[in-house]
Amino acid sequence: ERTTETYEPVVIAELASDEDLIWSISLQARIDAALANGEIYTIFQPKVLVQTGELVGVEALVRWRDPVKGLIPPDHFIRQCENAGRMSHLTRHVLTQACLAGTRLASQGTALPVAVNISATLVHERDIVRMVQETLAETGFDPQLLTLEITETYRISNHERAAEILGELRALGAKISMDDFGVGAASLEALLRLPFTEIKVDRLFTSAIKDDPKAAAILRSVLALGREMRIIVVAEGVEDEATLAILREMGCVVAQGFGISRPVTLEEIDHFQRLAPEIRRQNMV
Ligand code: C2E
Ligand code: MG
Ligand code: MG
Ligand code: MG
Image 1 (tube, protein in one colour):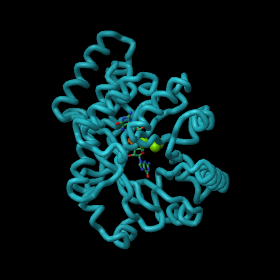
Image 2 (image 1 turned 60 degrees about the vertical axis):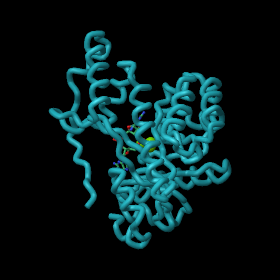
Image 3 (image 1 turned 180 degrees about the horizontal axis):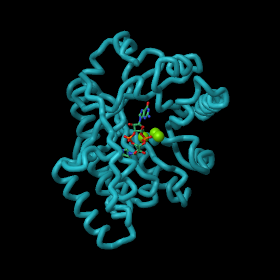
Image 4 (image 1 turned 180 degrees about the vertical axis):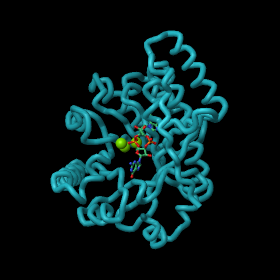
């Protein structure tokens, strides 16, 4: 059985004053300890073909299970992690776990693309290129199977520099995805200037297509944009069969969402992979 995640909306109240150096230092120590003792780990959400339900990749999503506070959603600690100067540390951890998972799946005969989320702030520094290169070498994961999902692209302040760094990541063989497409400013500029191979339409749009003709029009336009630019479009946040049916009709190729599968453990990914497509389809909501 799949373990569905129960999110308790835990807010780390004492971390709110991130300008306080003392908190920042204790936060650094807490994050480092959590990384070292396994409180911070990675789960995986399937990406599937809309037409057949076939598994075509997984996205690694970070989790922090605090022994006292319970499961802390990434939205609640990613920013604190950045403020504490631990983003690259966290990213290296997730990247390593994701690549190890990918290598393990490949060794079991399931060579699947694996996506890792990368904060926009990290693509201003060349360190990310070295990090990816080293992690690929350490884990033996095929670079062609690695996708880097750049989150909050609107935070990229220097497109020229980001284009160089993303270009180097492309040269290693990795794919580059623009996450949460459509929300935040300057997303078309980023699409023009940066070497993306994939667009992930934000779930704001996907979740509205069955009720809101405007959302449906936007989604169809993004699909057309993807076809014109020869960029894969992934619809994220598919929560029900009705939405999936509309996406199928629109010609959307890849989708992701709770209605297809929640994020699950690596073992459950293996199980999902082994289900026949018809059964996977029946499992959709
Ligand atoms: P994202 O990359 O856009 O990931 C999708 C988020 O939406 C995930 O939340 C996923 O669990 C959730 N989701 C997937 N399908 C559905 C659906 O059908 N309905 C709804 N309501 N939600 C759905 P999660 O794991 O809480 O992550 C939130 C965000 O945190 C991610 O958004 C990503 O921006 C960031 N994040 C997660 N892991 C990492 C990481 O390792 N590094 C970085 N830099 N950011 C991460
Ligand atoms: Mg993502
Ligand atoms: Mg996304
Ligand atoms: Mg999103």
